[in-house]
Image (cartoon, rainbow, N blue to C red; front, side, top):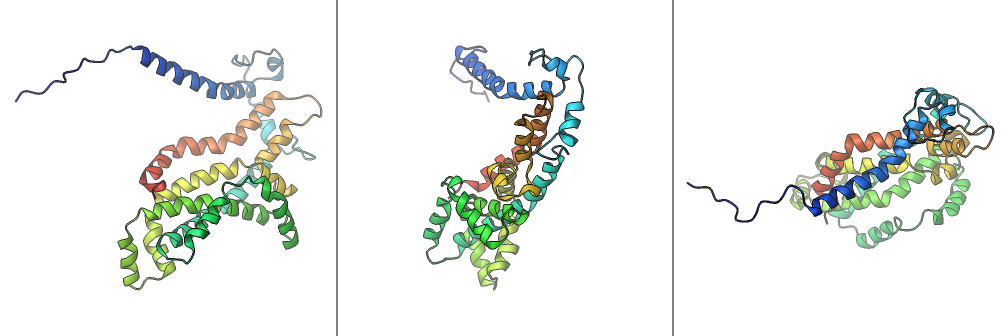
Length: 294
C-alpha cells in the first residue's frame, strides 16, 4: 500500500510571519520579565552598587543582607520586625477565607443547579451583580455594619469580607461546572433517598476536584494580593503582607534602601508566583473540565 503524500508545498523554515511572531513573543517576555530582573539584581546588591545607577547590571559583590533585613528588621510603621509579621498575618487570613468562600460557592452552585429553588435565576443574577460593582462602593457601609456588630478591625472581620466578596465568582464557577454534569446522577441519588447534604457530600463534592483547584488558585491569588480590604478591615494587629510592604516602600525616614524595598517586594509576591508555577497546568485542566460550561 502506497502512502499518500501531501500535495501542498512544504513550509519554509524561516518566514516573515514566523519572524514577526517570535519578535512579538520575545518583546512581550522582555516587557514582563525586565521589572522582575531589576528587582532581583537590585535586591542582591549593596547600596554602594545601587547608587552607581546601573540597574540592569549583575551585582559584583552579591549579598543576602537586604533579604534578611526585609524579612526580620525592616520598619513597617512603629515596629521594625520586618515583613515576616505581615506574612503570617496573610497566612492566617488566607486559609479560612479560601476554605469558607469555596465551600459557600460550592453549596450555592449546587443548590442553583440541581434544586429548583423558587426565584433561583433572580437570586443568582443579584448575587452575580455584586462581582461587577466596584469594591470601593461597599467600604463605608461595611465599616458601619461591622462596627455596629462589634467585630470591626479584627481577624473575623477581614475573613468575612473576603468570603462575601469571593462568593459571587465562586458561585458562578461551581454553578457552571455542576450544570455540565449529568442530571441523572442527581436523580438517581434522590431515588435512593439522598437528601440535600447527602447528595452534595457523597456524590457531587468528590467529582468537584477540577473546579475546586481552579477556585483555590483564583482565591489564593486574589486574597494574598489584596491591599484595600486588608488596610480597611484587618486592624493594626492583623495587617497583611501587602499593607506592610506599602509601609516599607513608602517610608520617608532616613536613607531609602532600594535593595531592601526590592527584596520585600519579591517576598510579598512569592506566594502567588509559587502558586502560578506549581499549579498553572491544574488551572488549565480545571477550566477544560468544565469551569466555563453552561
